[in-house]
Image 1 (cartoon, rainbow, N blue to C red):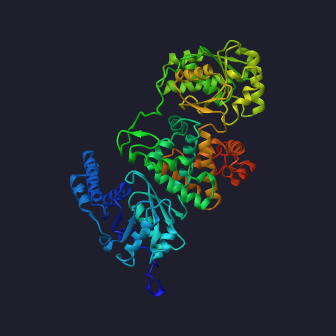
Image 2: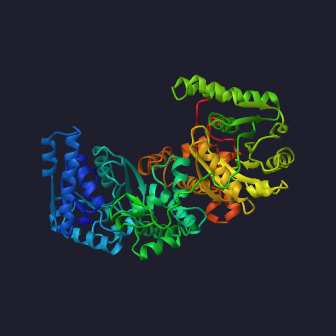
Length: 606
Protein backbone atom coordinates (compact mmCIF):
# COMPACT_ATOMS: atom_id res chain seq x y z
CA UNK A 1 0.00 0.00 0.00
CA UNK A 2 1.48 3.36 -1.05
CA UNK A 3 1.62 6.30 1.36
CA UNK A 4 -0.87 8.24 -0.76
CA UNK A 5 -3.58 5.64 -0.02
CA UNK A 6 -3.05 5.50 3.75
CA UNK A 7 -6.07 6.86 5.70
CA UNK A 8 -5.54 9.80 8.04
CA UNK A 9 -5.02 8.36 11.53
CA UNK A 10 -3.91 11.55 13.26
CA UNK A 11 -6.93 11.64 15.53
CA UNK A 12 -8.59 8.79 17.33
CA UNK A 13 -12.31 8.34 16.66
CA UNK A 14 -14.60 8.70 19.65
CA UNK A 15 -16.19 5.46 20.92
CA UNK A 16 -19.51 6.67 19.53
CA UNK A 17 -18.02 6.64 16.02
CA UNK A 18 -17.68 2.85 16.32
CA UNK A 19 -21.45 2.67 16.27
CA UNK A 20 -21.77 -0.21 13.80
CA UNK A 21 -19.78 -3.35 14.58
CA UNK A 22 -19.64 -6.57 12.58
CA UNK A 23 -18.89 -9.83 14.37
CA UNK A 24 -17.59 -12.58 12.07
CA UNK A 25 -18.08 -16.03 13.55
CA UNK A 26 -21.16 -16.69 15.70
CA UNK A 27 -19.95 -19.45 17.95
CA UNK A 28 -20.11 -19.12 21.73
CA UNK A 29 -17.62 -16.25 21.89
CA UNK A 30 -18.93 -14.39 18.85
CA UNK A 31 -22.49 -14.61 20.11
CA UNK A 32 -21.41 -13.33 23.53
CA UNK A 33 -19.55 -10.37 22.02
CA UNK A 34 -22.58 -9.56 19.85
CA UNK A 35 -24.78 -9.53 22.96
CA UNK A 36 -22.41 -7.15 24.78
CA UNK A 37 -22.36 -4.77 21.81
CA UNK A 38 -26.12 -4.82 21.23
CA UNK A 39 -26.85 -4.22 24.91
CA UNK A 40 -24.51 -1.21 24.80
CA UNK A 41 -26.46 0.40 21.97
CA UNK A 42 -24.28 -0.62 19.02
CA UNK A 43 -25.71 -1.78 15.70
CA UNK A 44 -24.41 -5.34 15.38
CA UNK A 45 -23.95 -7.22 12.12
CA UNK A 46 -23.52 -10.93 12.88
CA UNK A 47 -21.87 -12.92 10.08
CA UNK A 48 -21.51 -16.69 9.86
CA UNK A 49 -21.48 -18.92 6.80
CA UNK A 50 -23.45 -21.49 8.81
CA UNK A 51 -27.11 -20.41 8.84
CA UNK A 52 -27.78 -22.68 11.82
CA UNK A 53 -25.08 -20.87 13.84
CA UNK A 54 -26.64 -17.53 12.95
CA UNK A 55 -30.11 -18.71 14.02
CA UNK A 56 -28.67 -20.09 17.26
CA UNK A 57 -27.02 -16.73 17.98
CA UNK A 58 -30.38 -14.98 17.63
CA UNK A 59 -32.06 -17.57 19.85
CA UNK A 60 -29.32 -17.19 22.45
CA UNK A 61 -29.71 -13.40 22.52
CA UNK A 62 -33.49 -13.74 22.78
CA UNK A 63 -33.14 -16.08 25.76
CA UNK A 64 -30.49 -13.93 27.50
CA UNK A 65 -32.55 -10.75 27.17
CA UNK A 66 -35.71 -12.55 28.28
CA UNK A 67 -33.91 -13.56 31.48
CA UNK A 68 -32.79 -9.96 31.96
CA UNK A 69 -36.42 -8.78 31.70
CA UNK A 70 -37.53 -11.47 34.14
CA UNK A 71 -34.89 -10.30 36.62
CA UNK A 72 -35.99 -6.68 36.06
CA UNK A 73 -32.59 -5.61 34.75
CA UNK A 74 -34.09 -4.26 31.51
CA UNK A 75 -37.62 -3.50 30.32
CA UNK A 76 -39.42 -5.35 27.56
CA UNK A 77 -39.08 -2.24 25.37
CA UNK A 78 -35.33 -2.21 25.94
CA UNK A 79 -35.22 -5.90 25.10
CA UNK A 80 -36.96 -5.33 21.79
CA UNK A 81 -34.52 -2.52 20.98
CA UNK A 82 -31.55 -4.79 21.70
CA UNK A 83 -32.94 -7.55 19.48
CA UNK A 84 -33.62 -5.04 16.68
CA UNK A 85 -29.97 -3.95 16.76
CA UNK A 86 -28.73 -7.48 16.01
CA UNK A 87 -29.00 -8.67 12.42
CA UNK A 88 -27.39 -11.82 10.98
CA UNK A 89 -25.98 -12.57 7.53
CA UNK A 90 -24.03 -15.33 5.81
CA UNK A 91 -21.80 -13.17 3.60
CA UNK A 92 -18.87 -10.87 4.46
CA UNK A 93 -20.40 -8.24 2.15
CA UNK A 94 -22.72 -7.40 5.07
CA UNK A 95 -19.72 -5.79 6.84
CA UNK A 96 -19.43 -3.05 4.19
CA UNK A 97 -20.82 -0.33 6.48
CA UNK A 98 -19.13 -1.45 9.71
CA UNK A 99 -16.88 0.91 11.64
CA UNK A 100 -15.23 -2.04 13.38
CA UNK A 101 -15.12 -5.73 12.47
CA UNK A 102 -14.29 -8.32 15.15
CA UNK A 103 -13.27 -11.73 13.78
CA UNK A 104 -13.82 -14.72 16.08
CA UNK A 105 -13.62 -17.70 13.74
CA UNK A 106 -11.75 -20.87 14.86
CA UNK A 107 -8.04 -20.63 15.76
CA UNK A 108 -6.69 -21.48 12.30
CA UNK A 109 -4.34 -18.97 10.70
CA UNK A 110 -5.31 -19.68 7.08
CA UNK A 111 -9.00 -19.36 7.92
CA UNK A 112 -8.44 -16.03 9.64
CA UNK A 113 -6.24 -14.79 6.78
CA UNK A 114 -9.02 -15.59 4.31
CA UNK A 115 -11.53 -13.65 6.45
CA UNK A 116 -9.23 -10.61 6.56
CA UNK A 117 -8.59 -10.82 2.81
CA UNK A 118 -12.34 -10.91 2.22
CA UNK A 119 -12.88 -7.94 4.53
CA UNK A 120 -10.13 -5.94 2.80
CA UNK A 121 -12.20 -6.10 -0.37
CA UNK A 122 -15.43 -5.03 1.35
CA UNK A 123 -14.97 -2.54 4.18
CA UNK A 124 -14.24 1.21 4.10
CA UNK A 125 -10.59 2.41 4.26
CA UNK A 126 -11.09 3.73 7.80
CA UNK A 127 -12.72 0.57 9.20
CA UNK A 128 -10.78 -1.08 12.04
CA UNK A 129 -10.26 -4.85 11.73
CA UNK A 130 -9.85 -6.77 14.97
CA UNK A 131 -9.00 -10.42 15.52
CA UNK A 132 -10.23 -12.25 18.58
CA UNK A 133 -7.29 -14.68 18.55
CA UNK A 134 -5.55 -15.58 21.79
CA UNK A 135 -2.83 -17.70 20.20
CA UNK A 136 -2.02 -16.62 16.66
CA UNK A 137 0.14 -13.71 15.54
CA UNK A 138 -1.73 -10.43 15.23
CA UNK A 139 1.34 -8.99 13.49
CA UNK A 140 1.28 -11.67 10.82
CA UNK A 141 -2.42 -11.10 10.15
CA UNK A 142 -1.78 -7.37 9.94
CA UNK A 143 1.17 -7.76 7.57
CA UNK A 144 -0.92 -9.91 5.24
CA UNK A 145 -3.70 -7.32 5.25
CA UNK A 146 -4.01 -4.36 2.88
CA UNK A 147 -4.42 -2.05 5.90
CA UNK A 148 -1.94 -3.22 8.58
CA UNK A 149 -2.25 0.05 10.52
CA UNK A 150 -5.96 -0.68 11.09
CA UNK A 151 -5.47 -4.26 12.34
CA UNK A 152 -5.27 -5.15 16.02
CA UNK A 153 -6.39 -7.80 18.47
CA UNK A 154 -9.34 -7.54 20.83
CA UNK A 155 -9.46 -10.52 23.17
CA UNK A 156 -12.68 -10.96 25.14
CA UNK A 157 -12.99 -13.68 27.78
CA UNK A 158 -15.68 -16.34 28.01
CA UNK A 159 -18.51 -15.73 28.84
CA UNK A 160 -18.16 -12.31 27.21
CA UNK A 161 -21.27 -10.73 28.83
CA UNK A 162 -19.98 -11.54 32.33
CA UNK A 163 -16.19 -11.25 32.10
CA UNK A 164 -14.83 -7.72 32.55
CA UNK A 165 -11.39 -8.08 30.98
CA UNK A 166 -10.60 -7.16 27.38
CA UNK A 167 -7.01 -7.35 26.11
CA UNK A 168 -6.40 -4.80 23.34
CA UNK A 169 -3.45 -6.11 21.35
CA UNK A 170 -1.35 -3.90 19.08
CA UNK A 171 1.36 -5.00 16.67
CA UNK A 172 4.32 -2.85 15.61
CA UNK A 173 2.18 -1.90 12.60
CA UNK A 174 -0.94 -0.79 14.47
CA UNK A 175 -1.76 2.92 14.51
CA UNK A 176 -2.19 4.34 18.05
CA UNK A 177 -5.51 5.92 17.00
CA UNK A 178 -6.98 2.49 16.23
CA UNK A 179 -5.88 1.20 19.65
CA UNK A 180 -7.36 4.28 21.33
CA UNK A 181 -10.70 3.89 19.53
CA UNK A 182 -11.07 0.22 20.50
CA UNK A 183 -9.93 0.91 24.06
CA UNK A 184 -12.54 3.67 24.37
CA UNK A 185 -15.18 1.30 23.00
CA UNK A 186 -14.24 -1.34 25.57
CA UNK A 187 -14.69 1.24 28.34
CA UNK A 188 -18.07 2.21 26.85
CA UNK A 189 -19.09 -1.47 26.94
CA UNK A 190 -18.43 -1.52 30.69
CA UNK A 191 -15.25 -3.58 30.30
CA UNK A 192 -11.77 -3.13 31.76
CA UNK A 193 -9.31 -3.01 28.85
CA UNK A 194 -5.57 -3.47 29.18
CA UNK A 195 -3.17 -2.66 26.35
CA UNK A 196 -0.64 -5.38 25.49
CA UNK A 197 1.81 -6.25 22.75
CA UNK A 198 1.58 -9.13 20.33
CA UNK A 199 2.79 -12.42 21.71
CA UNK A 200 0.97 -15.77 22.05
CA UNK A 201 -1.44 -15.87 24.96
CA UNK A 202 -0.97 -12.17 25.73
CA UNK A 203 -1.14 -11.65 29.53
CA UNK A 204 -3.96 -13.74 30.97
CA UNK A 205 -3.74 -16.78 28.70
CA UNK A 206 0.05 -16.48 28.58
CA UNK A 207 0.08 -17.21 32.31
CA UNK A 208 -3.00 -19.42 32.45
CA UNK A 209 -2.12 -21.95 29.74
CA UNK A 210 1.32 -22.76 31.13
CA UNK A 211 -0.38 -23.64 34.42
CA UNK A 212 -3.08 -25.69 32.65
CA UNK A 213 -0.41 -27.53 30.68
CA UNK A 214 1.47 -28.49 33.83
CA UNK A 215 -1.74 -29.73 35.41
CA UNK A 216 -2.40 -31.92 32.36
CA UNK A 217 1.16 -33.30 32.58
CA UNK A 218 0.69 -33.96 36.31
CA UNK A 219 -2.47 -35.94 35.58
CA UNK A 220 -0.80 -37.79 32.69
CA UNK A 221 2.06 -38.88 34.95
CA UNK A 222 -0.52 -40.38 37.35
CA UNK A 223 0.95 -38.31 40.18
CA UNK A 224 -2.57 -37.40 41.30
CA UNK A 225 -6.12 -38.03 40.13
CA UNK A 226 -8.04 -35.47 38.09
CA UNK A 227 -10.43 -34.97 41.00
CA UNK A 228 -7.60 -34.34 43.48
CA UNK A 229 -5.74 -31.96 41.14
CA UNK A 230 -8.89 -29.92 40.56
CA UNK A 231 -9.94 -29.93 44.22
CA UNK A 232 -6.44 -28.92 45.33
CA UNK A 233 -6.40 -25.80 43.15
CA UNK A 234 -9.97 -24.80 44.00
CA UNK A 235 -9.62 -25.27 47.73
CA UNK A 236 -5.94 -24.40 48.10
CA UNK A 237 -5.93 -21.30 45.89
CA UNK A 238 -9.58 -20.21 45.85
CA UNK A 239 -9.86 -20.67 42.08
CA UNK A 240 -13.36 -20.87 40.55
CA UNK A 241 -12.50 -24.07 38.64
CA UNK A 242 -9.86 -26.74 38.74
CA UNK A 243 -7.40 -26.80 35.81
CA UNK A 244 -8.63 -30.01 34.16
CA UNK A 245 -12.28 -28.97 34.35
CA UNK A 246 -11.23 -25.61 32.89
CA UNK A 247 -9.41 -27.33 30.02
CA UNK A 248 -12.63 -29.19 29.24
CA UNK A 249 -14.53 -25.88 29.24
CA UNK A 250 -11.99 -24.09 27.03
CA UNK A 251 -11.62 -27.06 24.69
CA UNK A 252 -8.66 -29.43 24.76
CA UNK A 253 -7.97 -28.75 21.07
CA UNK A 254 -8.02 -24.98 21.63
CA UNK A 255 -5.63 -25.31 24.56
CA UNK A 256 -3.26 -27.39 22.48
CA UNK A 257 -3.30 -24.75 19.70
CA UNK A 258 -2.54 -21.95 22.15
CA UNK A 259 0.31 -23.92 23.75
CA UNK A 260 1.82 -24.82 20.36
CA UNK A 261 1.91 -21.12 19.49
CA UNK A 262 3.40 -20.20 22.88
CA UNK A 263 6.07 -22.90 22.62
CA UNK A 264 6.99 -21.87 19.07
CA UNK A 265 7.88 -18.43 20.41
CA UNK A 266 9.25 -19.17 23.89
CA UNK A 267 10.87 -22.60 23.39
CA UNK A 268 10.07 -23.03 27.09
CA UNK A 269 9.43 -26.69 27.90
CA UNK A 270 6.66 -25.61 30.27
CA UNK A 271 4.72 -24.49 27.16
CA UNK A 272 5.34 -27.67 25.14
CA UNK A 273 1.86 -29.24 25.04
CA UNK A 274 1.52 -32.27 27.31
CA UNK A 275 1.11 -35.37 25.10
CA UNK A 276 -2.26 -36.13 26.71
CA UNK A 277 -3.67 -32.96 25.12
CA UNK A 278 -2.75 -34.20 21.67
CA UNK A 279 -4.09 -37.69 22.37
CA UNK A 280 -7.45 -36.37 23.56
CA UNK A 281 -7.71 -33.86 20.70
CA UNK A 282 -6.88 -36.47 18.03
CA UNK A 283 -9.49 -38.79 19.52
CA UNK A 284 -12.13 -36.06 19.36
CA UNK A 285 -12.35 -35.92 23.16
CA UNK A 286 -12.13 -32.14 23.22
CA UNK A 287 -14.01 -31.43 26.45
CA UNK A 288 -17.52 -30.26 27.18
CA UNK A 289 -18.35 -29.51 23.56
CA UNK A 290 -17.73 -33.17 22.67
CA UNK A 291 -19.28 -34.58 25.84
CA UNK A 292 -15.96 -36.00 26.99
CA UNK A 293 -12.46 -34.74 27.70
CA UNK A 294 -10.68 -35.14 31.01
CA UNK A 295 -14.15 -35.77 32.43
CA UNK A 296 -17.29 -37.31 30.92
CA UNK A 297 -20.44 -35.17 30.56
CA UNK A 298 -24.09 -36.15 30.30
CA UNK A 299 -24.33 -34.68 26.78
CA UNK A 300 -22.20 -32.73 24.28
CA UNK A 301 -22.18 -29.07 25.32
CA UNK A 302 -23.25 -29.88 28.88
CA UNK A 303 -21.34 -28.80 31.97
CA UNK A 304 -22.70 -31.65 34.09
CA UNK A 305 -20.02 -34.27 34.69
CA UNK A 306 -21.15 -37.87 35.18
CA UNK A 307 -19.35 -40.85 36.72
CA UNK A 308 -17.06 -42.82 34.43
CA UNK A 309 -14.35 -45.47 34.70
CA UNK A 310 -11.95 -43.01 36.39
CA UNK A 311 -14.39 -41.75 39.01
CA UNK A 312 -13.26 -42.60 42.55
CA UNK A 313 -15.22 -45.39 44.15
CA UNK A 314 -17.15 -44.54 47.29
CA UNK A 315 -14.88 -45.96 49.96
CA UNK A 316 -15.11 -46.13 53.73
CA UNK A 317 -12.34 -43.72 54.75
CA UNK A 318 -12.12 -45.35 58.19
CA UNK A 319 -11.38 -48.84 56.84
CA UNK A 320 -8.03 -50.15 58.01
CA UNK A 321 -7.06 -47.02 59.95
CA UNK A 322 -5.71 -46.61 63.45
CA UNK A 323 -7.68 -45.07 66.29
CA UNK A 324 -6.88 -41.41 66.98
CA UNK A 325 -8.21 -39.59 70.05
CA UNK A 326 -5.16 -37.61 71.19
CA UNK A 327 -3.17 -35.29 68.91
CA UNK A 328 0.13 -33.56 69.52
CA UNK A 329 0.99 -30.37 67.63
CA UNK A 330 4.64 -29.23 67.70
CA UNK A 331 5.28 -25.54 67.17
CA UNK A 332 4.10 -22.16 68.41
CA UNK A 333 3.66 -20.12 65.22
CA UNK A 334 0.54 -19.20 63.26
CA UNK A 335 0.32 -22.54 61.47
CA UNK A 336 0.82 -24.63 64.62
CA UNK A 337 -1.82 -22.73 66.59
CA UNK A 338 -4.22 -22.89 63.62
CA UNK A 339 -3.83 -26.67 63.32
CA UNK A 340 -4.26 -27.12 67.08
CA UNK A 341 -7.47 -25.07 66.86
CA UNK A 342 -8.77 -27.28 64.04
CA UNK A 343 -8.24 -30.47 66.03
CA UNK A 344 -9.64 -29.05 69.28
CA UNK A 345 -12.83 -27.83 67.60
CA UNK A 346 -13.31 -31.34 66.15
CA UNK A 347 -13.27 -32.93 69.60
CA UNK A 348 -9.70 -34.24 69.77
CA UNK A 349 -7.57 -33.88 72.90
CA UNK A 350 -4.63 -31.70 71.85
CA UNK A 351 -1.17 -31.27 73.35
CA UNK A 352 0.42 -28.07 71.99
CA UNK A 353 4.18 -28.28 72.55
CA UNK A 354 6.67 -25.49 71.98
CA UNK A 355 10.30 -24.84 72.92
CA UNK A 356 9.09 -23.39 76.22
CA UNK A 357 5.88 -23.50 78.21
CA UNK A 358 5.62 -19.72 77.86
CA UNK A 359 5.62 -19.99 74.04
CA UNK A 360 3.02 -22.76 74.17
CA UNK A 361 0.77 -20.69 76.43
CA UNK A 362 1.07 -17.69 74.08
CA UNK A 363 0.04 -19.96 71.19
CA UNK A 364 -3.00 -21.11 73.20
CA UNK A 365 -3.86 -17.46 73.90
CA UNK A 366 -3.76 -16.83 70.15
CA UNK A 367 -6.19 -19.72 69.69
CA UNK A 368 -8.47 -18.24 72.38
CA UNK A 369 -8.59 -14.94 70.44
CA UNK A 370 -9.39 -16.77 67.21
CA UNK A 371 -12.19 -18.75 68.83
CA UNK A 372 -13.46 -15.56 70.43
CA UNK A 373 -13.79 -13.95 67.02
CA UNK A 374 -15.78 -16.98 65.85
CA UNK A 375 -18.15 -16.52 68.79
CA UNK A 376 -18.50 -12.79 68.06
CA UNK A 377 -19.40 -13.58 64.44
CA UNK A 378 -21.96 -16.17 65.47
CA UNK A 379 -20.01 -19.08 63.98
CA UNK A 380 -19.80 -21.01 67.25
CA UNK A 381 -21.28 -20.85 70.72
CA UNK A 382 -19.45 -19.73 73.84
CA UNK A 383 -19.86 -23.26 75.21
CA UNK A 384 -18.21 -24.76 72.12
CA UNK A 385 -15.36 -22.26 72.45
CA UNK A 386 -14.80 -23.19 76.10
CA UNK A 387 -14.89 -26.90 75.28
CA UNK A 388 -12.32 -26.49 72.49
CA UNK A 389 -10.00 -24.43 74.69
CA UNK A 390 -10.26 -26.96 77.51
CA UNK A 391 -9.15 -29.68 75.07
CA UNK A 392 -5.78 -27.94 74.50
CA UNK A 393 -2.92 -28.58 76.92
CA UNK A 394 0.16 -26.38 76.43
CA UNK A 395 3.55 -28.01 77.05
CA UNK A 396 7.16 -26.89 77.03
CA UNK A 397 8.60 -30.20 75.85
CA UNK A 398 7.88 -32.93 73.30
CA UNK A 399 7.92 -35.38 76.20
CA UNK A 400 4.22 -34.47 76.56
CA UNK A 401 3.56 -36.41 73.32
CA UNK A 402 4.09 -39.76 75.05
CA UNK A 403 0.45 -40.80 74.77
CA UNK A 404 -0.73 -39.06 71.56
CA UNK A 405 -2.01 -41.14 68.64
CA UNK A 406 -1.03 -38.56 66.02
CA UNK A 407 1.89 -36.12 66.23
CA UNK A 408 1.88 -33.20 63.78
CA UNK A 409 4.94 -30.96 63.46
CA UNK A 410 4.54 -27.35 62.30
CA UNK A 411 7.98 -25.89 63.00
CA UNK A 412 10.33 -23.88 60.76
CA UNK A 413 10.69 -24.97 57.11
CA UNK A 414 14.25 -26.16 57.66
CA UNK A 415 15.10 -29.80 56.98
CA UNK A 416 17.73 -30.09 59.72
CA UNK A 417 15.30 -28.66 62.29
CA UNK A 418 12.53 -31.03 61.21
CA UNK A 419 14.82 -34.08 61.16
CA UNK A 420 15.99 -33.34 64.70
CA UNK A 421 12.36 -33.02 65.80
CA UNK A 422 11.41 -36.35 64.18
CA UNK A 423 14.33 -38.05 65.89
CA UNK A 424 12.89 -36.82 69.18
CA UNK A 425 9.33 -37.86 68.24
CA UNK A 426 10.65 -41.35 67.45
CA UNK A 427 11.97 -41.64 71.01
CA UNK A 428 9.00 -40.03 72.76
CA UNK A 429 5.88 -41.25 70.92
CA UNK A 430 4.35 -44.63 71.66
CA UNK A 431 4.53 -47.47 69.15
CA UNK A 432 1.78 -47.14 66.51
CA UNK A 433 1.54 -43.36 66.75
CA UNK A 434 1.32 -41.63 63.36
CA UNK A 435 4.00 -38.97 62.81
CA UNK A 436 3.09 -36.19 60.36
CA UNK A 437 4.94 -33.23 58.89
CA UNK A 438 3.22 -30.11 57.56
CA UNK A 439 6.10 -29.25 55.22
CA UNK A 440 5.13 -27.53 51.98
CA UNK A 441 8.37 -28.06 50.10
CA UNK A 442 10.77 -30.45 51.84
CA UNK A 443 10.96 -34.22 51.20
CA UNK A 444 8.77 -36.09 53.65
CA UNK A 445 10.90 -39.22 53.31
CA UNK A 446 13.91 -37.27 54.66
CA UNK A 447 11.91 -36.69 57.86
CA UNK A 448 10.84 -40.35 57.88
CA UNK A 449 14.41 -41.57 57.62
CA UNK A 450 15.29 -39.63 60.79
CA UNK A 451 13.15 -42.18 62.68
CA UNK A 452 13.32 -45.92 63.24
CA UNK A 453 9.72 -46.25 61.95
CA UNK A 454 9.51 -44.55 58.55
CA UNK A 455 6.36 -46.50 57.76
CA UNK A 456 4.54 -44.38 60.39
CA UNK A 457 5.53 -41.04 58.81
CA UNK A 458 3.35 -39.09 56.38
CA UNK A 459 2.82 -35.53 55.14
CA UNK A 460 -0.23 -33.48 56.17
CA UNK A 461 0.12 -30.15 54.39
CA UNK A 462 -2.44 -27.75 55.84
CA UNK A 463 -2.95 -24.37 54.19
CA UNK A 464 -2.85 -21.01 55.94
CA UNK A 465 -5.03 -20.01 57.76
CA UNK A 466 -5.64 -23.60 58.82
CA UNK A 467 -9.04 -23.01 60.50
CA UNK A 468 -10.46 -21.49 57.29
CA UNK A 469 -8.75 -23.42 54.48
CA UNK A 470 -10.45 -26.72 53.61
CA UNK A 471 -7.56 -28.44 51.84
CA UNK A 472 -5.02 -30.88 53.25
CA UNK A 473 -2.47 -32.49 50.92
CA UNK A 474 -1.85 -36.03 52.20
CA UNK A 475 1.67 -36.97 51.14
CA UNK A 476 2.70 -40.62 51.07
CA UNK A 477 6.32 -41.60 50.80
CA UNK A 478 7.43 -44.89 49.27
CA UNK A 479 7.71 -46.19 52.85
CA UNK A 480 4.36 -44.99 54.31
CA UNK A 481 2.12 -47.83 55.52
CA UNK A 482 -1.36 -48.21 54.05
CA UNK A 483 -3.06 -48.01 57.45
CA UNK A 484 -1.21 -44.74 58.22
CA UNK A 485 -2.56 -43.26 54.99
CA UNK A 486 -6.07 -44.49 55.84
CA UNK A 487 -5.77 -43.03 59.34
CA UNK A 488 -4.84 -39.57 58.14
CA UNK A 489 -7.62 -39.49 55.53
CA UNK A 490 -10.11 -40.47 58.24
CA UNK A 491 -8.77 -37.76 60.55
CA UNK A 492 -9.12 -35.18 57.76
CA UNK A 493 -12.77 -36.15 57.41
CA UNK A 494 -13.31 -35.75 61.17
CA UNK A 495 -11.82 -32.26 61.19
CA UNK A 496 -13.92 -31.35 58.11
CA UNK A 497 -11.02 -30.95 55.72
CA UNK A 498 -10.80 -32.19 52.13
CA UNK A 499 -7.83 -34.54 51.70
CA UNK A 500 -6.08 -34.95 48.36
CA UNK A 501 -3.51 -37.69 47.81
CA UNK A 502 -0.13 -37.01 46.28
CA UNK A 503 3.34 -38.48 46.22
CA UNK A 504 6.45 -37.17 47.95
CA UNK A 505 7.90 -34.79 45.40
CA UNK A 506 8.66 -31.07 45.44
CA UNK A 507 5.66 -28.79 45.64
CA UNK A 508 3.13 -31.62 45.92
CA UNK A 509 0.08 -30.50 43.89
CA UNK A 510 -0.66 -26.88 44.76
CA UNK A 511 2.80 -25.34 44.97
CA UNK A 512 4.06 -27.34 41.98
CA UNK A 513 1.35 -25.71 39.86
CA UNK A 514 1.10 -22.33 41.59
CA UNK A 515 4.70 -21.17 41.82
CA UNK A 516 5.76 -21.63 38.19
CA UNK A 517 2.74 -19.47 37.30
CA UNK A 518 3.90 -16.80 39.79
CA UNK A 519 7.45 -17.04 38.44
CA UNK A 520 6.22 -16.55 34.86
CA UNK A 521 4.31 -13.43 35.95
CA UNK A 522 7.55 -11.98 37.31
CA UNK A 523 9.29 -12.75 34.00
CA UNK A 524 6.56 -10.79 32.16
CA UNK A 525 7.42 -7.73 34.23
CA UNK A 526 11.17 -8.30 33.73
CA UNK A 527 10.60 -8.33 29.97
CA UNK A 528 8.57 -5.07 30.20
CA UNK A 529 5.65 -6.82 28.51
CA UNK A 530 3.06 -5.66 31.04
CA UNK A 531 2.86 -3.80 34.35
CA UNK A 532 2.22 -5.29 37.78
CA UNK A 533 -1.21 -3.68 37.85
CA UNK A 534 -2.19 -4.92 34.39
CA UNK A 535 -1.06 -8.47 35.15
CA UNK A 536 -2.90 -8.55 38.48
CA UNK A 537 -6.02 -7.10 36.83
CA UNK A 538 -5.81 -9.60 33.96
CA UNK A 539 -5.74 -12.64 36.24
CA UNK A 540 -8.51 -11.38 38.51
CA UNK A 541 -10.80 -10.17 35.74
CA UNK A 542 -9.91 -12.70 33.05
CA UNK A 543 -9.18 -15.77 35.14
CA UNK A 544 -11.42 -15.25 38.15
CA UNK A 545 -8.44 -15.44 40.52
CA UNK A 546 -9.10 -14.05 44.01
CA UNK A 547 -5.73 -12.26 43.95
CA UNK A 548 -3.35 -11.23 41.21
CA UNK A 549 0.07 -12.92 41.17
CA UNK A 550 1.95 -9.92 42.61
CA UNK A 551 -0.61 -9.39 45.36
CA UNK A 552 -0.23 -13.07 46.25
CA UNK A 553 3.57 -13.02 46.14
CA UNK A 554 3.67 -10.08 48.56
CA UNK A 555 1.26 -11.88 50.91
CA UNK A 556 3.12 -15.22 50.82
CA UNK A 557 6.49 -13.52 51.23
CA UNK A 558 9.11 -13.19 48.52
CA UNK A 559 11.67 -15.13 50.57
CA UNK A 560 9.24 -18.03 51.00
CA UNK A 561 8.36 -17.89 47.30
CA UNK A 562 12.01 -17.91 46.27
CA UNK A 563 12.74 -20.89 48.52
CA UNK A 564 9.90 -22.88 46.94
CA UNK A 565 11.02 -21.91 43.43
CA UNK A 566 14.53 -23.12 44.21
CA UNK A 567 13.23 -26.44 45.53
CA UNK A 568 11.11 -26.97 42.40
CA UNK A 569 14.02 -26.09 40.12
CA UNK A 570 16.41 -28.36 42.01
CA UNK A 571 14.01 -31.33 41.85
CA UNK A 572 12.76 -31.08 38.27
CA UNK A 573 15.87 -29.43 36.70
CA UNK A 574 13.70 -27.63 34.14
CA UNK A 575 15.28 -24.32 33.01
CA UNK A 576 11.79 -22.77 32.91
CA UNK A 577 11.52 -23.27 36.68
CA UNK A 578 14.65 -21.26 37.50
CA UNK A 579 13.65 -18.38 39.80
CA UNK A 580 13.21 -15.07 37.98
CA UNK A 581 16.24 -12.83 38.66
CA UNK A 582 13.96 -9.98 39.78
CA UNK A 583 12.62 -12.19 42.59
CA UNK A 584 16.17 -12.99 43.73
CA UNK A 585 17.16 -9.31 43.62
CA UNK A 586 14.20 -8.19 45.72
CA UNK A 587 14.89 -10.87 48.34
CA UNK A 588 18.57 -9.91 48.44
CA UNK A 589 17.49 -6.31 49.04
CA UNK A 590 15.30 -7.35 51.96
CA UNK A 591 12.08 -6.50 50.11
CA UNK A 592 10.08 -9.53 51.21
CA UNK A 593 6.49 -8.34 50.76
CA UNK A 594 3.91 -7.08 53.20
CA UNK A 595 5.81 -8.32 56.23
CA UNK A 596 8.67 -5.86 55.52
CA UNK A 597 6.51 -3.08 54.07
CA UNK A 598 7.90 -3.51 50.58
CA UNK A 599 7.92 -6.27 47.98
CA UNK A 600 6.67 -5.80 44.46
CA UNK A 601 4.66 -2.93 45.91
CA UNK A 602 5.11 -0.68 48.93
CA UNK A 603 2.85 -0.93 51.99
CA UNK A 604 2.14 1.38 54.89
CA UNK A 605 4.01 0.34 58.00
CA UNK A 606 1.79 -0.79 60.85
